[in-house]
Amino acid sequence: MITVVADDITGAAEIAGVCLRYGLQVSFGINSVPETPADVRVIATDSRSATEIEAYNTHKKLATEIFTDSDSFVFKKCDSVLRGYVLTELAALMEISAKNNVILQPANPATGRCIRNSQYYIEEKLLEKTGFAIDPDFPAHSSEVITLLSERSPLTRNQILITTNESESQAKKIQIDDCNSTEELNKNLSNFDKNQLYAGSAAFFEQILKKQFPLNTIKSAPSHSIVSDYLLIAGSTHPQSHIYIESLRSADCPVCYFPEELLQENTSDVAIESYANTLVSIWTKHRRLALSISNKKVTFPGSSTILKIRINKIVSIILAQCPVAELLIEGGATAYDILSTLKWQTLTPIQEISPGVVRMQIQHPTTIYLTIKPGSYQWPEDLIKY
Image (cartoon, rainbow, N blue to C red):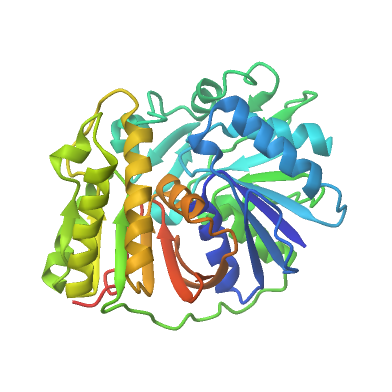
């Protein structure tokens, strides 16, 4: 059995997609070990949106359940550009498992995300020269991977050695090597030991999966496209997100943003419910809708949390009144918050539409399909039919 712990729900779904690609059974839990037996158990947390101490406690609690099974191989899924409290979360897993060495490889060369001379590059650009430099939660002020890990986990950065040197000897060590190709992803596994901790990207996990299972053939996924009865929530601030949802107008899909009244620090429940009911009318007429908070930066004290609560409430009202068949959400934190608000805890991954874009089934109380993806990934061009 393989158990994967992810720091956000889209990362967990991406791992589930890799497993589905190879025809493996996947069980999926949110903040808990799934009870359903499967080849791979995937656990989604939202620790990247939490505080560092909350992230530590979440992983420590899960570790006490996971490591009771001595036959389970554990993989820690982290963000490919090392956002979040990667070092602190690994420290929690190391503490409970008593495993002192971690092989960490966040790179995904197939998408141009590589590490060269200990510097992180995205399509030949240093990370600090990309849009990740202005990430609202974990801005990349440096491209040096050891610096990124250390700066983002101040509580544990002095407790564990982070090294690019395999021969380095230390009581607790996290090794992060250069990686510029799939061959170099495999190089990290030259001395593979299932009793050691491994962490990193979905691409790295795929190479480990091939070592754990006799996987010779990739299962071809049936094509899937959506014409109507969908609701798309664009929770990402990534510029590509706004370009995509605006393009949906060509598919006769209404594209809506919060009115100015809902973008202020103070508004009323009446205003929120009134706007939600307006969206219900729009969806009922068109049987489709794309919703985003804003196509511009919105800042006021506590804006992230306040706007999150508002969109959660609006989505709840729409789903309560509209027979939405396909719910599409981009952005891990957005997806996690909406699912938590709706109290949807049981998800069944059924299809990897494209790498990182995964469709899951939910009973609500009738069947509804949820498709999620990371904010920095693109929706497949043919997912929504024009």
